[in-house]
Length: 608
Ligand code: M6R
Image (cartoon, rainbow, N blue to C red):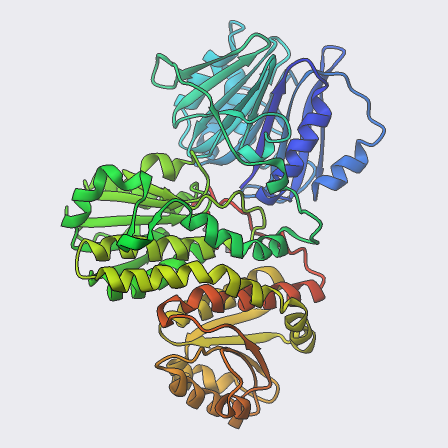
């Protein structure tokens, strides 16, 4: 939700902090701020709004501090304002903190700190941490004060703190990601690896309940529960180019244009074509357990949840196992019986989504086998699941998830083939699907090549106030995803429905000019959906169809058609989703929306 950064080293901290914050802008853009040292005094500069506003303010600001912290905010407690922007400090302006997360008992803590004489300036829960640490900061050992303070706190935090009294940064994590970066005599702390890549690829992910102390000589990690943690750094293989826009106007478009490669990358090294089999490095130790499972529960949020809804059809068809897909935020509070033969599968791009993580923890408490399909290497869900599969598609920066969805689908097909081959799926059936999966990158390129045609369609409809998306079977979740994509980046109200449901209510909305997007490839239910489109046309609605061929049937019931290549019916969603993403992108662009950073949203939702 927010991004935190800390630097201690030999260079000027300010440019480093600003550069890192830029890389984390997708995490929040309600305000930005930095804390540095000048003439033995704490200097805090913070502004509400996007990072560029702060940067403008700092244009002529000179500062030589080689220690500092920074923050980019996605507001939870307290409106976005200059005052509520981080960093926050203690009563004497000697100690300063940046925080990502939520302090759930902040009201109680604040009341008792006020009684002790602390003076609060903001409405944030985070400021409580600054005063709480101040309260216990007695003997020039910042880490001890941080440790005692955090013992009193309920909630989630990734923090970095420093004090004028000591040349060190103290960072801690519980429920919000924190990663250290190391480069010779320079030390960094950030909310994610993307923020460190301009400086180093040597990183160390803090575990839950760990505190890191970084000074000019090195770093040390201690546990909130006591004792030291000795762990090795790891080298990440994401390149800086992968987190730059590469000439595209938005990360979202860049990420859609990468989708052909996304399919290749998600399959690389995992397919044994001649055997019709799949090998996932992360599943080797649990292959026998997988033979035993008799039910799969998929937990995920947002777009990842819709990938799960497609998995439901795919796994049921190829594996013949019952699959249930639940919103992670619902699963975590349900009281359904979970038995040992179930598998709980989390799908999460970031690997940090709080609800999905809580769902996994609940499954583990019930001794149920847990898996993750996760993109961010070393993320919490990746570490806490019993086994898992990485997407291996590089960072996804735009808040709107696109290439991660395509990759999640590819992994789902591969996983279904693996499970299917352990059960009823024949080698020949598996080879047929894998062969076709191999052909998808080229087919995707023929769709992305139609970007300008899709933009022309966007031009006709971008001023509409409402949209309905319809699809059947595997393409019903694509209709849901289409509506989500449009809502989140263009702020147009949109709903996704199974095409057959239209006549049970939503049809009442259709009037002259009302746009309906139909995902209608030429599959077994093609003609059924044609009938639904007749119903729309009879009410003078406008139909935009995504299909494989402009035949007479479709011509009669559509206003605009986007043609995609044919593939196996079961693989259709990988192709049908691409025009859906491009349409949302171009509509949002024509409406002048801030596509990569939609209002009120954040890339990584680490609060409940
Ligand atoms: O990182 P995750 O995949 O767990 O994120 C889940 C959702 O927050 C995410 O897919 C969200 O719905 C996207 N903004 C949709 O584009």
